[in-house]
Amino acid sequence: MAEQQLLRKAAIERLSSPEQLDTLMRVTSPMGWIALLAIGVLVFSTIVWSIVGSLSVRVDGQGILLRGETVQALEVAAGGTVVKLEVGRGDVVQPGQLVARLGLPDIENKLVTARAQLAEMERLERSQGSGMAELQGNLRAQLDRLQHQRALKKQLVDKGLVTQQSLLAIDQQISGIQSNLIQSQMGRGDRGSRVEDKKLEVKELETKLATDTQVKAQFGGRVVATLASVGQQVRPGDKLLTLEAEHAPVRFVGFIPLNEGKKVVPGMEARISPSNVKSEEYGFMLGKIQSVSDFASTPEELQRTFNNQQLAKTFSESSPFQVNVTPDLDAHSPSGFRWTSSQGPPIKIDSGTPCALQVIVERRRPISYVIPTVKQALGVS
Image 1 (cartoon, rainbow, N blue to C red):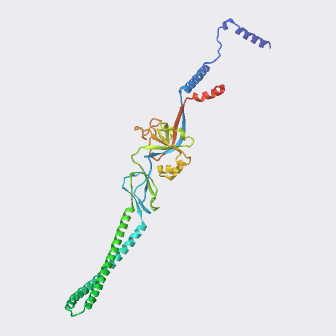
Image 2 (image 1 turned 180 degrees about the vertical axis):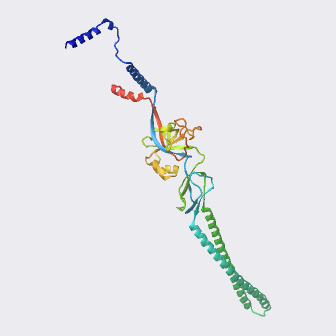
Image 3 (image 1 turned 180 degrees about the horizontal axis):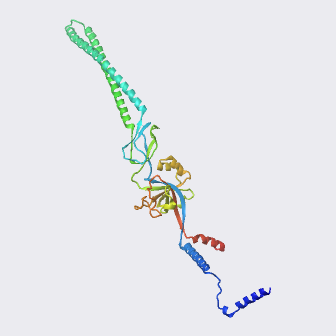
């Protein structure tokens, strides 16, 4: 116990010694000052950022890249069976180009029947024609003989040697033969007319078969999809192919949810994320909103745009507003479009690609989110 009091007394004497009074007492270490300075810089930077910085308020949607205004459908004019497809997806088709061949069994059967009927009618015409010519020759011979007899009989009547009644009898015979001759000529004419009608029918069927079996493109474009396969039965008006304009610029057709649609207006910044590109690695395609529909799009409207029932059904499920976006072009980018990153992905982005959409509807100062809370806390209106 005495030893502890001695140590305590020595410590008090050392502290009270005049030679220790000018020594600084360390309150904070250098590392503490550094940490304090870092916190101050962070707070100051946050305040500056909240005043001069900005946050993007966005609306999300979805859509697809298209080339041209709409996708057009190529329809068949006659029903039949698809025998061969001359083009496939991605092929470029010119107006008037043969794109498919159809088998038309109904027309083929009609043509076979009509040809057989024509052959039989021509055979009968030939066989009956020879007999009819002989009959008409006999009638003409009888007519000549009776006319000669009438001339002789007329001389006798004029001399009063025979009565007028005998001359009338010859006239009746001549009239009967003339009538038979006319009827035979008319019958041959009717048969000839029927043969000509049948020839015309055969020619029309041959023309229809040659025309309808070859499906040709009424307009040009690039094949987006084939809607029929070889061996499939098609009816008049069925869609065979869908085509898009080959040289039209690529545009983006997007769809915004119903409760967000009125927030989007033309001129706003749009960011497009194709489904085959990683946005965290390559960023977004940039573009501008060109137009926004006044009302929610209907399935019928989307069907006219896409000519694809599945796409129309998918995009119309939430009764969305349609927006048309023009992507910004960049000739130096591999994809041909401008991206938030320097170059974007090293691949070509083409029509038919599904994409996610972000529309920047507003940019706000971060401090604007804090001010209402502070006012409410202070009770300031």
